[in-house]
Image 1: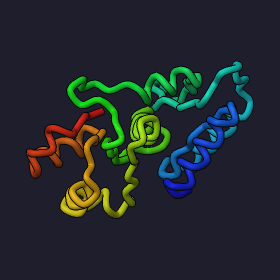
Image 2: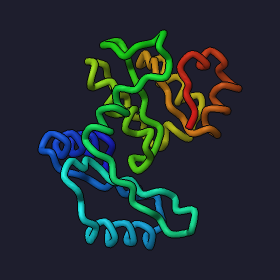
Image 3: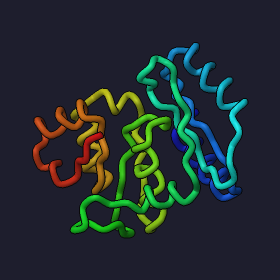
Length: 166
């Protein structure tokens, strides 16, 4: 599923008061099927917004339920009080939709009139192209996996103002 499709569907599901389970298409097919099968049979308490599967320290993924309130609280969370969320907040989504950081990347700017920039997988693999896309789109907030954040900061030190690692 394309990123734009995911965001539109997630917003629709949220507005309808329902829940979703994001499944990363880059996972092995067996793991995807396990998540789909397990989520299908799992009861969903009232108020559940989404269920994200952990990596499974035991080797078996575990579904973690999150409520609409927790989605709103996480999306509203901003670690840097000197940079509050506003209409000039421009986030970039670099993580899988099945990773919790995706919630802040996608929903936080929507709560304050800001924007979310969704990069292609091809762009994510080219550091210079990725950095240039940040500059072109006025990105103000970057939540990156640690390995990618290190590479970005080593090559583009001015990003230290925007990068938050997970």
